[in-house]
Amino acid sequence: MKKTTLFLLLFILTTGLTANINIDSLFAISQDKGIPDTLKVKALNSIAFDGFLYSNPDSTFKIAQQAFDLAKAINYDNGMASALKNQADSYLVRTGYEETIPYYR
Image (cartoon, rainbow, N blue to C red; front, side, top):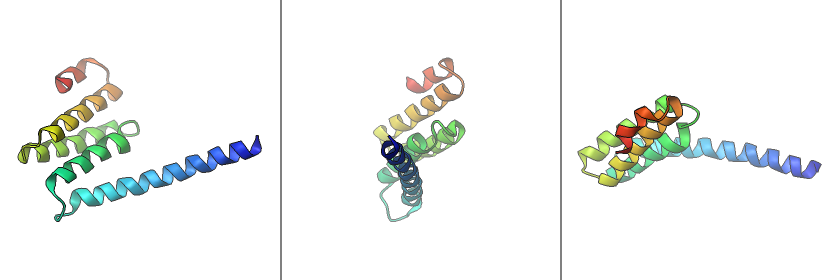
């Protein structure tokens, strides 16, 4: 039983540390001028959903807005759709269902 508890504790700590590294890497990708814009949009959407949705939904909305603006500028429909979904999810976490409807549509 003690070994299982120790294993779970180490697993949780390790997973949390690697999540921070991934978020930092995604931020670096989103700011790199040599990276294609579609990858920047994907990185921003990943940051918004995986990094901040439940811990800070306001940041999710702002980062998803950045992703949407960039995707719209390059006419990247999948990126715009993902960004709108992330914005709707942030409203769902913060306030509830009614505000999410325009974003999901």
